[in-house]
Length: 474
Image (cartoon, rainbow, N blue to C red; front, side, top):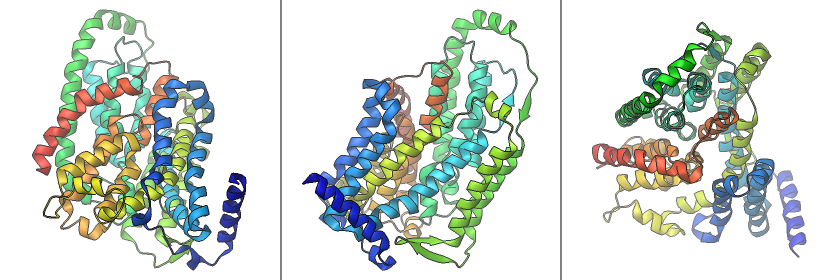
């Protein structure tokens, strides 16, 4: 019976692909979906959290298959229950409308940044390390948290390879460079890019998040500098002795053409935000624009040019590997598919299964509880990945970018802060977190285990977030 249903679902899918595009117009009604539709989404996230610790060998060999399994656990029931048209339309909207642009954007930044090699003999003193974090905070808004993290993590590792105490440096690197600092433009962090795709203006986040971002990053840099100074003084003599035997290398930057390609990517994002090509069409019921397609093609061209123009020696010096971006791509495929019914249920608001969640972010008079929007978006972003979580609460707040940028500005600020800032709460909160951990561990350095990292984030970040709530959202 089960095999027959699966076969029927596949046939329905193939039939739906042959139908005229209007057949995909009908979508899911979130108010009709039961809480059971959350199970695949919860399942893949639980696997991401637990499997690397419980069954590491199995996970590293099969995480892509696990992601596909949970994606099918959502897609097949959709086909069986609602038919091919609705199912294909809903999944296509998630994959073509959100996942494909997202992964092209992240992958292109990763590829281009991976072609830039900073050659030097930096010494990992507290001042140098804090300077790296501050520089990353600036670059994160220009080249994205992914690009900035990939550019700076390798020279930061080299600067500290003779230090005894290094784990805290990479934890703060994730906090600042891979997450919180990238909150000022859609280039900065994947959730904001998805918001940009939904109509949020390019510089809206710059205006509304600059004060909270500077507060958070300033406090984190101060805490880090104090902590690193204390630890550095414990190992200073041994470290300086080891550094004295190190072969010094003059400062240099290789693969400079990739800075031009980063500029091309930035220009493509700006182009898509300000230019209306007048070209519109649908693909499997997903509305697409000429400028959006051109933007993604430019991203791919920039990545291809980087691969063609950057020597293999430069990428080898960076220990460049496709594994981090492949891991993100495979896992996020599963996440974006399994979140389809979850997003619709959240969009249904008080009429859906998530009515209790809606009640938490709504005041008795019907207005938005912005502090709760920040904490609910943030709490889920740390464990459900911040990009789809941003979309979930964006939809819950109405999903209308024009309204949210004006009378709903504080609410959109709270959602944006929660998604970007609290993506640092766990390894699965943001795509660059995966990449940083993978690179550091590939260099033979230890990082906290999943739950140990939570102790770092709770102890350091939560007090800062409480302060931000009081200062900017109350």
